[in-house]
Length: 525
Image (cartoon, rainbow, N blue to C red; front, side):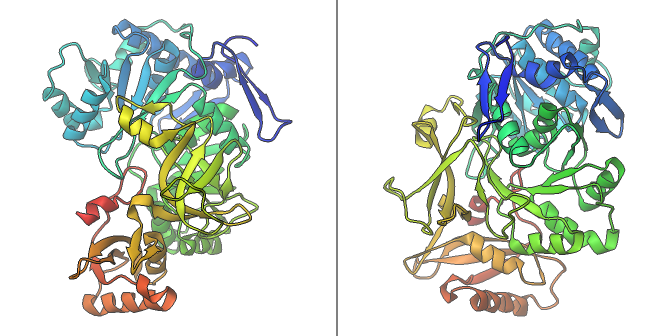
């Protein structure tokens, strides 16, 4: 095989992926399209215009050379606090091609969070979109790092875009191997401080082929639009690696997603696949009658981040004629590894394994549990992270012989369908019986007055753990005390009686990570 190539043998199931000894992922996702004659094909679309694959390659090369001109060397980290725009593509792939490690960061963080990640990563460079400058600069001002390179990616004054415009448009890929370090992502902190997740060059190929192609059936004709942002694993695959792997198109939206602007963008750019989190689908579902959006271009809708309540799936399908394909993925595994298929959609069920992945469900002692029993979900596949950066103890706790503990509680039936029962550390034991908060939340959301719900364990007067519900209503309650009692009775009627929430608290919103996961640890405290 030639250097920087990957052979895809689709005669096997799953497809067999063979990587050249020297493999830089930027060549497979960027350079290859120009080499194969797709230079004039549109790669990126947004309100500012279109970018072809040929233009993308040139800008990636310029960005990689600009990073080198700044003094970065292979293995150095560049932190990216960059909105969903073409500059994100340029910096991310330019860094990889130059051997520098890009680290996309949640743009919604505050200065203390940025300071923590800058220090933890030992970054050599920080680039940011001007919109986030105040928080990033406050973080940098609190540090003592005189050698740190730092500048806005674009805008007025000295910018990275200005440096890149003067840089060489040609760049040879830095030598790398399929299993060597390529990029990092930081966990969104659903259970505590973020951790740097180290991914290899092959990982984006694995997820793009096994989930994108083999499950979603994506092709070069697909136009991808993701409400989930590029800075975390789900959005990175949706809006960047999936279209770039197949030669398709990515539609970008730089702002904060809301039902109105998501519907407007779908109507304007006519994507064929739309990706979002359950919260966004719920919000959009509530606005369908009011906004009457044109969704005729869509052939598929995908959800991840947390389990999709069956009520939302069924409501969306009833009103749009489109199913939502629920799945589970993690930052550590990079994208979805258990999923529903278009031909096999089951409300409240995560689905079956994605090709290329294995799973087992273990009890607290490491033994596999019988079908239908709840246990800890462990997964193995070639896109699993190599380690947590600078955290060997937490790495050893999460990884064992190629298997990774996801931190989720799951059951599997005899037919191979997986059902989520919440985070392993969110499970409740009520009266000596395991109770899934997800099950109670799904029941609450089925009530006509409820938009969202989260359930945690709270000690009662006797110190026994009982479920407590935090509920976001669709509209303010005229009689909140009466409604709270109604919701308790509603749960008792639809669930085993011991599972009902002993207390219901109405809140304006729920604390969430960037991926849409409810941070139950914050509710518990």
